[in-house]
Length: 181
Image 1 (tube, rainbow, N blue to C red):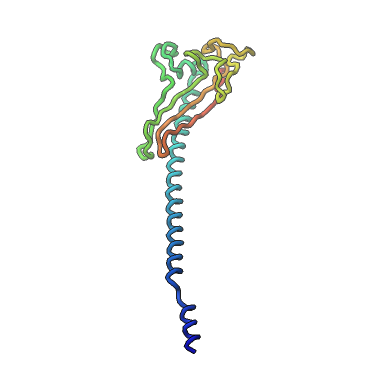
Image 2: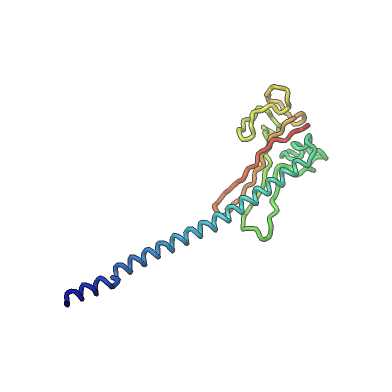
C-alpha cells in the first residue's frame, strides 16, 4: 500500500524541470513577439518615408506637366543661361521637399530632376536604360549625338528623391516620358 501511494504522489506533481521548460518557452515566445512588434514598427516608419518621397516626386511631376512642353527641359535642367524667362530665373534641376511638422524624422530629403544629358546637352545617344536611352527624341528616325534641347518631341525624365532615414541612405525614382506636342 505504501508503494502505491508513493507512486501516485510522484505522478501527480509538476517537477522543477517541467516548470523551467515552460518558463523558457514563455520567454522565447515573448522575445519573438517583441522582435515582431519592433520589426513591424520599423517597417511602418520606412513605408512612411517612402510614401513621403513618392508624394514629393509626384508633386514635382505635376509641376513639370504645368510648364509649356517645349520649355520643360530649359526650365528644369541644371543650366541657367537657357532659362525661358531669362538667365537664372528657372527653378533648375534640384528641388526641396516640404515636410509636414508631424512627419517622421528624416534628414536631408532632396530631389533631383534628371534628363538624358551629356555636357549640358539633351542628347539622344546617352546610355541610360531606366530612361529608355538611347532613343530618338526629335522623331526624325535617327539617333544622333546632337543637342535636342530645342526640338525634342519625347522628353524622358527621372525624378529622384534621396534621404537618410531609419535604415540609412535611401532613394525613390519616378520615371516618365513627357510629350512635346
